[in-house]
Image 1 (cartoon, rainbow, N blue to C red):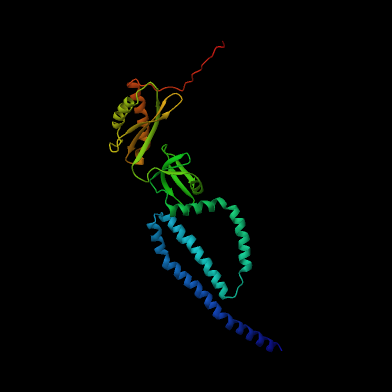
Image 2: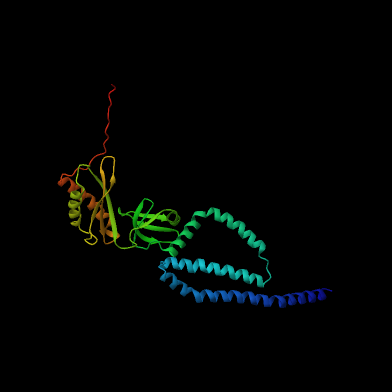
Length: 276
């Protein structure tokens, strides 16, 4: 009797193996095909990302980690289907775990997604001067999670990419030439043509200010205590913006004082009416 049972069990095992072997081969074949796909597309993707301006370290992260994991998950799902494994319960469990993980890593995921959008949209590049919120500096490095800038104080600032995506971003280097505008005021008694003439001449002497287009000085409107004026000059690039701005402000103050042109303080006139 034992001999018969053993024979039946052996036949059942052989039959199961015969049925499962093609499915196992199919599953391994699926995994092999996806491995080939990854190996064939790895270098072209790296070159494509490099052509798009993505740094080498970030390109390797995208291709060797994100892209590989996505292909691996797809391959495992298809291979499991070849073996007749029902992944519904597994996917449901992963979904619950994914929700919990999503809440725990919400900021990190948002930063990574924002980093990908920065790579695609390219609002700035390394070496350019940008303003994010009230932060002004030169872009030093762009990663998947953060963007790092160096300020005028030589301070290294790390900004989460999500903050960049949600803030108003100003790229001071995107178009080369840059115009600097400095507001100031003069007393109502002063002659606007005279102020314009002496300031244009003075501003043209500042090193770094372009002669073409030349500096301009215009009257913007009437203020409570002064005529509101704007001095406008052009510089070659954003590298000279802040240094030139400081020189323009100093030159305006110095020139107006030298020419005895009044820069009025805020003032108020009070009229007292006597009862008759």
